[in-house]
Every structure is written in structure tokens, then in C-alpha cells.
Image (cartoon, rainbow over all chains, first blue to last red; front, side, top):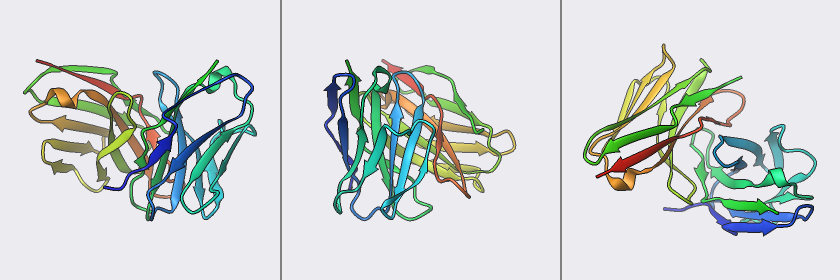
Length: 113
Length: 112
């Protein structure tokens, strides 16, 4: 069964540094998402992306965050100047047609030191 | 805003049935999902139910929906140690945002 893949599985970064989290969505999917899960807390929506533009974003997704689909397969989340509170699991998800559910990757654990 | 609530822990004996409960507040919820998260892994979609259904069964999994009470449950029959994981309930409305709202997750611990 096709799956969403994320790299790296664990990223350790110094506070203030930029980080890029990578995702390869399922190949025929059209809608792409990033979520985060701070340890012990709920899965929180960050941003959705469709037709090469952001379709929706949450309050968490401020100016330090950006997303990009640089080619036909990758979908990236960039955090420009990381803060300690950015430490979390970051999940990428994708879905096909409107009524289909989202499929999630295994996540990237981001640790900010 | 929308909210989804689940109990945090459930402990069952291997071979027994597990029932994980979820309540939600958004009366316009149309799709309700159950995801499973094993240690170190992502969210695996287990099953989902459309709000015009009361029940959905898929092998050992049974989903019950009480739309009037906004209550969703996931029953796992003959629970195995491999079922130990965190189970997330999520809901989304049919119109507007397609973003699901997740609960905090229920940790299911299966012991011999």
C-alpha cells in the first residue's frame, strides 16, 4: 500500500537555526498537510496546501514557518529561526479526492537545544 | 470551537474486548475517524464512519456512533498485545475546513 514518507526521522538543531522537514506524499494525492504533536499533547494542525498554494493555516503557523512543493514529489516545512518550543513531532499527511481521509507519515521528531 | 475528548488510558487483558470512547462537540461533524499510533510511528488510519451511519464493522473493529449524544466508540474484539498503542479519535465537518480535530489519544495497554 502506498504511504507517506518523512525524513529525517529525528532532527536535532540548535535554537535559532533553520530546519527543513521533508515529506514525500502519496503520488496521486492532491492535498498536503503538516501537523505537530508536542509531547503528551494533541495533534495540532499547522497548514494545508493545494494547487501549489496554502489553502488554510492555523495560528501556530506564523511567519517563521513556510511550506514548499519544490518538485512533483516533495513537500517541505521550513522553520526559519527555531525556538525551544518548536520541539515536537511533526507529521505530514496527504489525501486524494475531497471525501477521502488523510494518510499520515511516521513523523519527524524535532529536538531544539 | 470544536473539541474532542477521550480518556487517557485503558488497560485490558489479552483476549478481552477493548472499548475506547470519544465525545465531540461539533454537531456538524460528518466524518469521524479512528487513528492508531504505535511507539515511534505515525498515525495509521484504522477506520472511519460517516455520520449517517450508526455502526461500522471491520474484522475485529466495531465503530459505534451515537450522533444524538455526540459519542463515538471503538471496540476491539479479542485484544492482542500488538494492539497496544495510542488511539486517536478525530472529527471533521463536511463543509468548510477539511481539517480534522483530534482528541488527545487513549493509551491502550494490553497485558497477558
